[in-house]
Length: 420
Image (tube, rainbow, N blue to C red; front, side, top):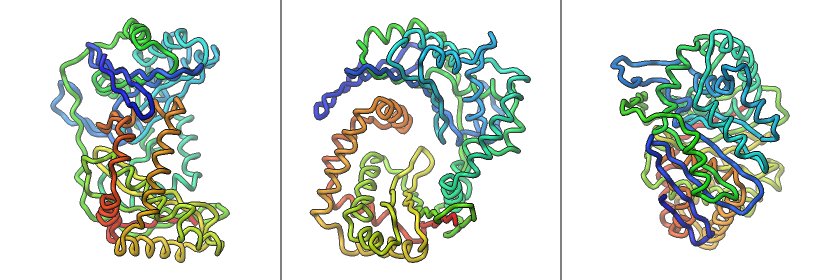
């Protein structure tokens, strides 16, 4: 087993690539709780591909990754694995993102018993015309529920204003029209194309002896390696945004605003840029910044805006989200602050304070098993080593963060999405 160690936080990750191609990561921690997540590198954006051994392009309906996530729990014996796991006191779940789908459970007891069920259902799909149809109504309700979330509406509106062709425009759950086209044959084709061990990762964290838990996983693996590859295809995306402003009306008490900057530079320094943008969030709009204090004292902001960097293999962008009754004033104030710091540079004291804050947040996340495991999964599919965050954050200097501010926060690449 390969061992990656971080001496700063006294953590070790044990990594083994099995003969069939599945990567298993184990992070031992002295705690009663145990957590496991098994994920495939297949999400909402993966809607066009050449299936293994096929020369014709396959295009699947939007929302099919999420639909398959729902259906994988159903077994040929009539049981639903989610119910089975819940019945033995295990907290099981699953989720679908833009670029991966994950199945997980956490518990304090019955881990091995749960592992039997867990590894059985992920490796043995059972789709029929009847059970696929039965799920359609449930997912339709979920789609309508998401349509009522202002946070989701403001986000999807921003993506569609920012990207013309990129698959991030696809709603993870799809639409009522697109899921109507999903059947058992399409689900099996997706499963056989992407639920392949060489396309998957399993992360286990808790009070484990790495060699022992690895043997338990190996003894339950039935997936075989297949040398034929699945080849994905993605749309070409222009550099320009589609439009700079978009708004919707919903029944909410205070308008929700999302300012987004399209980043056309899919940098190799993903960790460095991610951390720099976290620092910029603190420097520009954190609770101790003059901009936030002024907007808060005037009643134009009631809470600290959030700033985040979202990126994958085909897209990257910065998002600033906040609520206000003074949309134009606050948006303009934030824009002026960004332009001022771009011109005048970052205050050294503010930079050091932001750097310490971000480091503390990374350390804090490593006290939570679910945060550790889901980060290891997400980062792995982005070709990132999660433990590198601790090293990279100490290497970042003020000049690099100033360059990120100048290169990413460009007015022509800005989109403002509003839900009133």
